Length: 416
Image 1: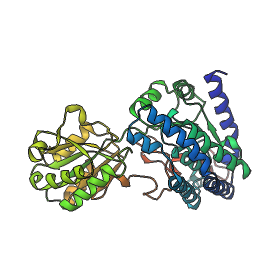
Image 2: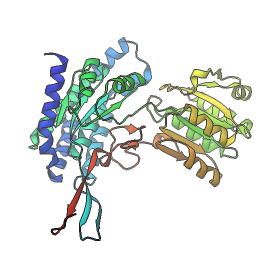
Image 3: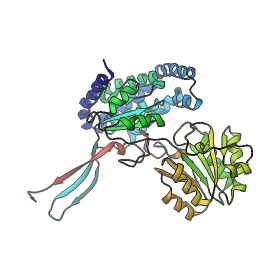
């Protein structure tokens, strides 16, 4: 069977499952989600066995440590994924929510109601947790999903999808609510290149994957692009707080999209602020690449080149630049940022407010780590990804983001 035919069959299966999901009750969907969580815990050994093979193969190919960290699952991480599914169970069902309702002068009653999108395509790389999170979120929001994961996690994704599909079927919903495609470039092109095949495609991964999807897409997209996230430390900032935030933002998980990739420091106070922050980062194993002014204050950091600014390292490496106050920070972010997450550490409420208004990003953080820009941390349960595009969603995509609107007009014989 050709890749094109395999993709067509997968999308047809997901489309056939879509009506049953759209009309499923909250009780039916939550029961299926509870079943998924229970089976993840019960069958964790099968997932770990598959993941061990994927990790070993990735190491043989020389994949860097940050990718291995994203790929690797252990019992604790699998239990955390199951816990996340149960959080989704606890959240309100968005389907059928009346967002607005009002009466017109002619007596018509107008309302807007949330309804499922239909068939969602999820294209992602070495993040097997996405297999479960995308399945759970689309199920709860009444959508079917076609999953195309990366080659690095192919065995793990298959093991997780088997658990998810079996659990859904055991609770009386169609297993084809979740369909898995082979990991190949051809499957991506076939998936996003034919109008009507899916209703929304969500690419989540590196620059190469996003470019591949954008170049070949003829279906609606919400982009989950790279996270070139900055932390700007303002003059007068609490240096202890700034160091704590910088270390967490960069090093708690360097290979994720909400990790800091560039530290900006106000030149008016850089002599006080930068040396202790740099020391905290380097003491925790971070390589720093600084501009001329930064290296004058911290000679032990490496020299930064132009390509280091605006680069998503996804590793324990951070660019550093001394900038001319808030104006300089905002100019740098406008030039090099990816509109994902931007942070200011400051004691000045007026500058914090200006940063909130003028930093162009899906999320702006004041005096906290960029790592909080995450669906679970923001109360969404889980996320299908963090959208950096502007339509139809921006930021973490939870249940609400996986619905669209239906208008209803109720009358009593009115004509126009």
